[in-house]
Length: 296
Image: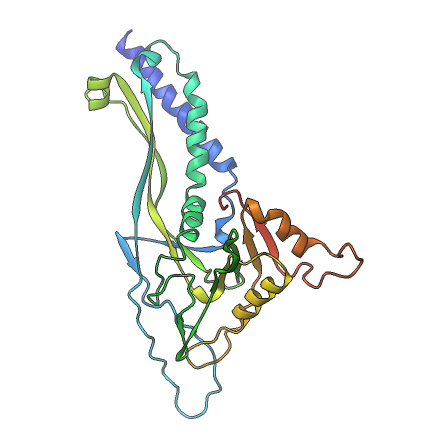
């Protein structure tokens, strides 16, 4: 096949592939992770969140200002590098047979849009062992709090986990740190290793970032059976969170996150206005229910 035609095909193919990627990227449902996580731009290989755990509040001004000495924490989120690569045979380009790759590029765009949500929900499932800013697992029974300890985790019953979050504040319970958004690229030079050694062109995506923990005070995880009593226990525990001075933080759970196995129970517990007996449901719309297939 003439080199000129191959070059022309490669140009058209890149435009088509990138368009398919972008269309699917823009149309994808990214599982609205921003309800759970604050997006933090990153400019280096890792970011130190020394300020986590500081809860600024106003006090009556009597005499001199009281300078709050912030306790520094050594919580660092290190960026990770992610990629996905698709091989396109040189023969398919020379034979004008590259239409079948379009759906693959579209799926790559779809998955790239879902990348932050994937990291967020993977992190949640590791949160009973992975440490947060205070040196305890994010979901723990022994978080330091005003000279004592506090729990945001109940491991009773060993049921599928249910999560409560206060998502009403500017800083969310989790952090998504983005160093580089997903970028579409190609390797099609005739002298590249892929073309010379394997007779294939490469198309793919690279992204850099990571998910991390914000404030444990805004989250609660329970594996207790999902019922009114256990919901109220988790809700009330969150409402009693205090700062270093012992003042209530005003935490108010707004979101219940469940996986597929708890979807029906959560919907009945929170979204059903009346019980079968005719009594009013005291938990009706107490929080928003979010069911995701990314959790068990």
